Amino acid sequence: METLRRGGVIALPTETVYGLAANAEDELAVRRVFAIKGRPATHPLIVHVARAEEVSSWARRVPDEAWRLAAAFWPGPLTLVLQRSARATDAVTGGQDTVALRVPHHPVALAVLDALGGGVAAPSANRFGRVSPTTAEHVRVDLGDEVDLLLDGGPCTVGVESTIVDLSGGAPAVLRPGGLAVEEIARVLGREVPVRTSATVRVSGSLASHYAPRAGVVLAEPSEVAARVAALRAQGRSVGVLGPPTIPLPPDVPRYDVPEDPAGAARLLYMRLREADLHGHDVLVACLPRAEGLGIAVRDRLARAAAPRPPGA
Ligand code: TXA
Ligand code: MG
Image 1 (cartoon, rainbow, N blue to C red):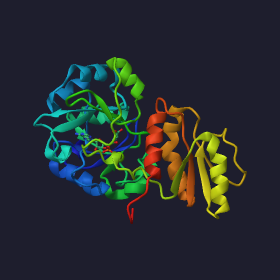
Image 2 (cartoon, rainbow, N blue to C red):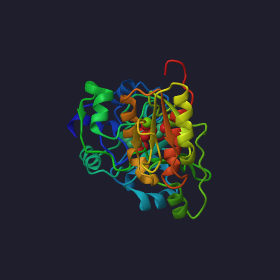
Image 3 (cartoon, protein in one colour):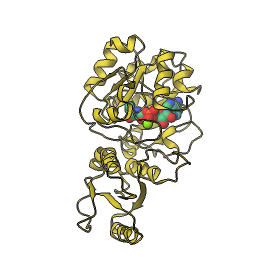
């Protein structure tokens, strides 16, 4: 991968979302990733590797539970946080003593990693605080010619970011629900794994106001959608609805369709949020999927999209 080896920054498809990738061992290139994203340099990045064995060179200690999760789910939408080795620099870890690692499940990403023969630091290829890209076109719209190369691997099949599991010490905990169901992780580990999204580590996706579309977002259970829409329209607001086709709506209310099943909702979530943005609604009423499987990640992202934003954001 010549561009990465020369210190370039590329946009790369993965099964979750598109990543903005640099050679993890090239500090200048990693700094450019932060600059392009507009992300604070203290927020750590995920290091992507081609196969599970490679984590031993990036992590000082790989506990048995990490190997078990890696064997069960890699390549796949799972990120493990482990104690870092010297190979994981401050530029990548944001100065923390842990490193986040994952093996993505996408032929293009794996081919790039194989060709580089190293690790690739890659956050989602969106501007800081905005919705993650799930197509090459989304990246083009967000980052344009600021990347040296954009690899088009088609639409992402998972559609939300990886699930982050902290195994750096103490009991395992989920730091970000994502494309791998928490229930699956608990099943392999044979124990409950708590979701701890407000930990002290700097997980930028854990900021309350994140993954934000431009319209205001109002959350609703399926049975509440119609009443919410009616109330908002009575106030003169222009309203769109993000939800499955089974929700009854007045014919003149635009609907951004997502399947009823949680995995289907995850796959299309960001694409539909972007489509809704193009219509410039005042408010998007988002119908919440069931709180199970990938529905937990979808609810998490929608809750962050609905959170109050800092001025100017
Ligand atoms: O699916 C994904 O994970 C995508 C694709 C491109 O792989 N990447 C992604 O990256 O979502 P990003 O940077 O948008 O989110 C990575 C998350 C951030 O919230 C970051 O703070 C957290 O991982 N993270 C990275 N290193 C960490 C560490 N040492 N401890 C805790 N959290 C960490
Ligand atoms: Mg992100």
